[in-house]
Amino acid sequence: MNSKNWIGGEWITPNAGEVVIKNPSNVREDVGVLHLSDATHVIQAEQAARKAFASWSRLTGAARADYLYKMAGALEARLVEVATLASLEMGKPITEMRGEVMRGVNLLRYYAAEGVRANGVVIPSNETNVLQYTKRVPLGVVGIITPWNFPVAIPIWKIAPALICGNAVIWKPAEFASLTASRLAEIFASIDLPAGVLNLVIGKGSKIGDVLLEQVALNAVSFTGSTSTGTRVAEICARRNIKYQTEMGGKNAAIVLNDANLDKTIPMIISGAFRSAGQKCTATSRIIVESGIYEPFVESLKKAVSAIKLAAALDPAAYLGPVASASQHKTVMTYVKMAREQADIVVEGPSLAEANEGNYIRPIVAAGVDADHPLIQEEIFGPVAALLKASDFDETIALCNRTVFGLSASVFTQNLAHAHRFLDEAQAGMVRVNQETAGVEYQAPFGGMKLSSSHTREQGQAALDFYTEIKTCAISYA
Ligand code: NAD
Image (cartoon, rainbow, N blue to C red; front, side):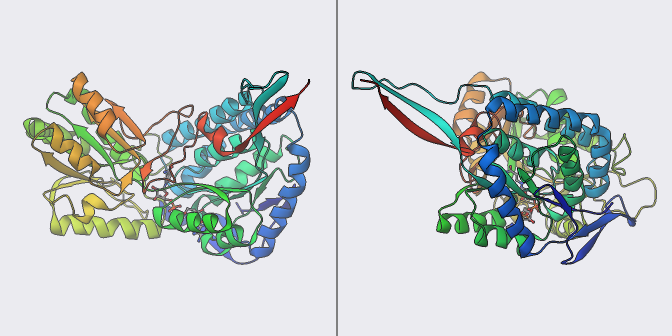
């Protein structure tokens, strides 16, 4: 498959360079070719989006909803095809990828329904015969910059609310998710979405990302990616007074207290740490265990990790597949090496049964380093989890909060008082009791504290706040 830009309703193959995408499950196999864009494509996309905004923003919410319902139906009809392509492109196991595409379908339907929901409030006036109320209005042209680790769900959780609120979109996906992005655009084009309402521009973040942020008259930017890129995006947007949201990295803790039910806890810790090969912003990367349960926890964890199946992404039995790319493999392996040299290896999962040439990394749990060690402090974004022992509940909370990140955190306990204290005191945007750190539902706000976020939220009703501005209206009929 070849990638294509979709700008103003036209399919364009840009020619500012090519990248061959290798199957991360077997790097000898090519999945497709990316055709990279340059500044002219970004400028064309802005012009197309600006033109489309004029009419799209004037449609009724119900009319925009019709398009989103059709987008949902078209995506659902091609769920297996999209999931398979994404699994081939970035290595997420097919079982997870199918779930992710379905989440995209649900997000489209959820936001379609917003088209006919109340979008303001009546505020009593101090004067007689004055009607005072608020209404949401669209922002204009929104730049959407997405990462590769959720190649379907993250773009849709931005595009769907942006569109239903009446905005036009320029979407720049990550390189390692651009074939999937092209296929999604084709599917959305098939329902005759008006030209220019959604524009796809494929290319390198360092080139066209910069053009998008610096040279285009954007009204808002929604970014998901690493904290280093997101901080830069925020600086540029703040300087240009462009509304922005940045959802960034995490170093999420799962706390296991002495009274945790291990039979239920272990599968959730394993899933949080190793599904998607640990490449979720909400992945469990620190496991903080109270001393009274440490030994039995470690024994159960060893058994469970030893039974994990590492396999090619299209193998339905794969619990985790490869990491997404050669560069991702190189980065994560520096931490594996660090763990082998500087930490105690608690357990390492089995390697692939068959000979392979993929970007595979065996799941690994390390312990025995102090709380300031890079294995505990840095986002690894791979199947590497670190274990910390805490003497009591207060220490588990202190360790949980000892990080610059604040995306997600979980506690496993039967104690209601500890559960509530954790929900109050854990410094994370998403806090969960007896649930894994990953897996927040699409209708609930998603986002982080501290360096994980611009302190805005995505998904659910929170997204509507970002993709609109509130106008305060007053009418005198005296
Ligand atoms: P990344 O920061 O490398 O890239 C993210 C996007 O930004 C890509 O589309 C990339 O091309 C673009 N980009 C790169 N340089 C740019 C620039 N100078 N200007 C504009 N755009 C630029 O991140 P990634 O490797 O694609 O994704 C992994 C990261 O994303 C991890 O840190 C993970 O925690 C984070 N993430 C966060 C969330 C969340 O909601 N908090 C969700 C998923 C992933």
